[in-house]
Image (cartoon, rainbow, N blue to C red):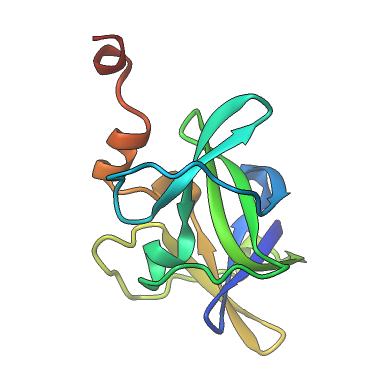
Length: 150
């Protein structure tokens, strides 16, 4: 499988590129006053407003530090388009799916943290974009159609 790698602090995380639509440079986002923890704003993506979440806030409780390698990873999220702001997005990695193993640890609220493997003397942990958002954040960013119409 082909993976897109990024760092949170000194740890490497990866997303299977089958979920990735595009990787864009960091651009100015429209802030959303009163938004949930982890939501950093809206991106104008080809004329469409796309919500963007900060993967660092969802994992490590502090903002992504904006650098030249900070990117917005546009992904398919349960039939919606979602942006993930991530730091040190610098590489693609090819690893056979069978090399990933369960971590043996489950932390409530971090269901998106998937299997791990060792690669070039470092651990890689899969991120499952379809489980990235809590119910509260998901319902805020992607309200049910019946609620949106009402």
